[in-house]
Length: 64
Image (cartoon, rainbow, N blue to C red; front, top):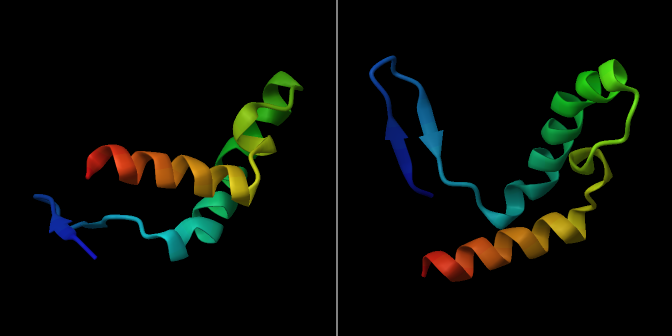
């Protein structure tokens, strides 16, 4: 895991594949209010875990 700190002492860590279920849950919770405001189902609310895994793998491959 790669970690770095900013000037406020906040820790940032590179996401790992094992983090994806938590990221998906956070993404859903973060976009829920937007969907309620605009009365639409926006793409982040429809993304499945397998889709997020594919996106993660593609990003990881492009960075290596």
